[in-house]
Image (cartoon, rainbow, N blue to C red; front, side):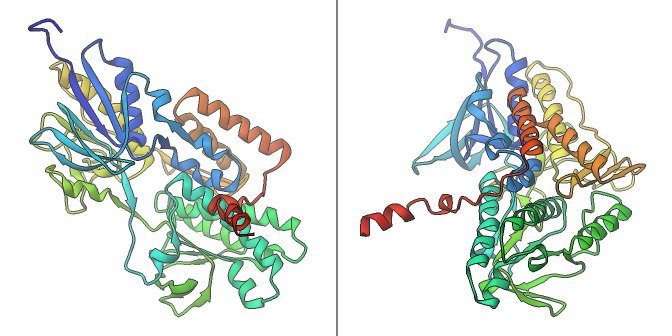
Length: 442
């Protein structure tokens, strides 16, 4: 490079989820030639669109279609598949641990923290050993195969106690993730039992456990009550104001005295900011999130930003009533914050004024299984059933990144509508070397 020519700024995006991908996409489109380079670091080579995980688990969408390959869509960015283990912003370096275990130091000029969140586990005996989360495509695929394999095992056993345990399924956490996962998986299992001679829908036990006095706090209380009634009409047991005390060996003990055995325990009871943030010199709030201004800039720093679940961003739509209010950890905020983040980073690069992130709550949509859903728009328009389900699909399809993935998902839906859903358990995926090992020993 010629002497005196300005060096391009090095932008490091830590995390390739909602915020990381959308921000990188926006920057690679709008950055001028040699204005800046963009590096994205994430342990996975893809971004997962989590709102579609329940449908992927239920077989309505091919799991590969709910993820977006980072290298394919971020052609003008440098993608590193690794885990950031430390950020020293004072020195402008990040420590990255690669898949093979070796570490490298990545230098940068501008930082964007998009680490997202992880499951928030509670000290419940047996949870770590028996519970399964619902935040990754791997967990969605596992649960699909696991639920269907429980039906196969129940069909083949003559032990009534074991059969009862195999056909008992528990979801702990009544937010969006929990309710949608429960509804889609129960709907799939209900459809699947038609192919089993000795199992009917009434033989299965599906249980939802929620610690608060309502489910899906994102929708109105009235819609929450309606959702509970819909689930109970399908035979699903809903425990409100109830907590799990123990899950050891699959024996579920609730604090209201209820006890039963279950071979499937799904944990969706909340998230927390990525704990890696504790290994940084960024300012954190009491919940471990990066403290930010309304412009998504890290407090006290002119060259660092954060957005999404790992950021404590002032919620300007609520600060009049609560000056300390921050945006909730939701996909709705993450996607919109990424859109504001792109022009703000460009403005900082070009010496222009940044704008604050302002987004008023506009509504929520939720699926309760095939052709069933609830919608609450601005607290005024409330839809139920098929129309709400259709709106849920339309909304999330519009938010799915890339035209490629949108088309593939639409074809998945069309195929499922014409040929009905597939209910095949591919248990070999969970342990692919079983048959090979058996052959070696024979």
